[in-house]
Each structure stands twice: as C-alpha cells, then as structure tokens.
Length: 446
Ligand code: 2IT
Image (tube, rainbow, N blue to C red; front, side, top):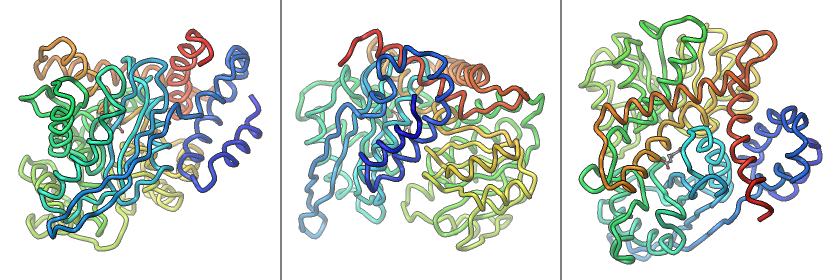
C-alpha cells in the first residue's frame, strides 16, 4: 500500500476533519508493513474500502424546552462497517459532537469490535445536545425526538446503539421507550438497558473493569503486580467509576481523579465504597465539576484549572474524552516515573503523546484494545437478548475477563517488536484489521 498517497487522499476527502484523519493515520502507519507482506489486501483494495464509512446519516432533532421554546440540534449515525456483524457502537451527547467526531469514533469502533471476537460491526452516533443543566423532562423529550428519527435506520440485526459520553441508563431508557412506542417491538435494539428490561449485569462497570483486566495483562507481561501501584485517572463519569472500583478491588492506590474544573488528590486513596459511590453521585447531579469531592472528603485537596497528568504516578488512565493527554503531559508523566499509560477514553492521547510514550518505552495501551470491555459486554447483552435469558454476574464477568485476555494476547502476537517491546497500538490495529479485512474479501466487492 502507498501510505503517502492514501494519507493525501484522506486529507483531500475529509477536509476539516482532524480527528478522523488522526485515527486513520494511526491505523495506516501501524498496519502498513503487515498489508505489504500480505498482497491480497491490496489486490482487493481493502484499505481504501475500510476507510470509507458505509453510510453517514445526519438528521435534525427538534424538541421543546421547559419554557415551551422549540430547540434544534443535529443528530448523527455513522454506520462504518458491517462485514462481521450488525453495526454496533455508542451514542454520544456532548456539545463537541460533529461529523468528524462521529466518523473517528465509528472507525475506531470497527477495529475495537473486531478485537472483541464477537460478531459486531462498527458504528457510532450522537448529537451536539448538551445534557448539562437540562431538566429530566428536557432530556426525555430530546431522547424521544432523537429516536423518532434514528429508529428508521436501526434494528437488532441492523444496527444496535448503546451509551457513550452523556448517554447512560436513563437516556438509553428514554430512547428504548420511544423505539418501542413507534415500532411496537420489545427487542435488543439498544444495549446498556436496565436489568429489568433486557440489560446485562456488569454492563455499567464493564468498560472500567475491562480496562483494568487489560492493564493486568500488561503488568503480567512485565512480571509486575497491580498491588499498591500509585494510579491517577482523568474524569469522574461512568468509565472512571468502573475503573476506580476495579482498581480498589485489586489493591491499587488511586490518588487522583479530575473534571473540567481541575483535579483532586486524595493521598489516602479513592478506594472506599463511599468515595467511589460519590463519583456517581457527582456525575448524576450533572453539575460536571469535581471540586465538591474535596469538600465532602477532608483527605482530598482540589487543584483548580490544572490537568491531572502533573500528579506523579506509576499508572495513568485516560477516562474522559479524546486528545485529553498531549505531548507535554506525556513528557511530564515520563519525567515523574510513569510505567503504564492506559487509554480508556477513545483516542485519549494525541499522536505526539503516543509517540513520546513509545519512544520512552512506556507500556502504552490504546483505547480500542483497553476499553473494548464496554462494547464486548454489550455484545454479551445482545446474546442474552437473542436467547431470551440472562447470565449471572459471575458468568458475565468470566466472559469479559476471557475477552480482555484474548485481546491482550492478540496485541502481544502482532505487536511485539524485535527488542521485546510490546507495541500495543500496532498489535491492536493489525489484529482488529485482519478479521474485518478477511470478511470483506470473502463477501466480495460491495
Ligand atoms: O466506545 C465504546 O465502545 C462505547 N461507547 C460502547 C459501545 C457499545 O455499543 O456498548
């Protein structure tokens, strides 16, 4: 494959879409050698074909706020690739959502879902709707309006959305209710549902749990242990919460979490049920700031307006949003002795940050491998819905552990370099690519 030409084409075809270009570039650079060693991929133009989303749906979402005033937002669903299963991926409600955001996330999702070994294609959706400061009624009316349009394009065998930033169990509930009202069918068309109506145990915790299981694999590969390790993470939402729970259970010492207003340090550790539950409470009140954590717990100190990456640690985990850790942050972490950096948010690190970390031989896990536990458990929810039965907590957790171990093994298989350094980015991208690419070849030109 001709990397230079492909990149020039992508840049020309996707003007003003830096996120999509960043995600595509990372994949192309790391699969280049593998593709060149396997000429069938060029023969069938697989790389060119995998880069192009199968469908992008953009729609108007009109709803009425509490004052009776009509409001309008933009809704998206990017159906990226269906080669190995129905489109699958979350829905993000956040003011930063654009077509670019949706395209990069759907592209990443295709590779991530392939890594899970479950039959799921890649998709992503969302809106620039900002749930912050909205009343329950406004959120419900928005979700209903969003689903009124989206339902035309989804279905349990076609496209199965779930949550992401700004979309949790409550929003999934409102969207599911609207789907049912219009289509009159109670089916597994969304995941992340409530337990009483088709949801799976562990789904809320799964992204964080899976990331810590993946981190366990990284530590094992270095004959290292998680016990007593000093950790920091960004965010205090659902993903941060699941990560904190599992870190505490396994005896790591999480000392810092962050919000858009700054970060808090708690040298006693954010590891008691009370402290971890408070993360959820903070999040649910949707004030979107982390400062109150330091008012509630006297052992915590708040640092306004600062990025959490300046806190010395051995393990750092991004749990908030894309490009939240840049080159400066990476260099600071390296200087302060970080050993493991785990992207739990999608594309949490800039390309320059990844480069700096890899150059310093820091163990670095990309989001599409480390955070795949969330969508994997969505896949398990789909299986349970199809069978019309529910697995217990242990069954789901065992399956999740097995999936994360498999992803780690695949990263080692395709990412280990001659000097022994495990390039997890390369490993994840090649392993994710193979399954989708081979399925595309088998299914002919479409
Ligand atoms: O980024 C992700 O993998 C998710 N937001 C979860 C998607 C899903 O379908 O569970």
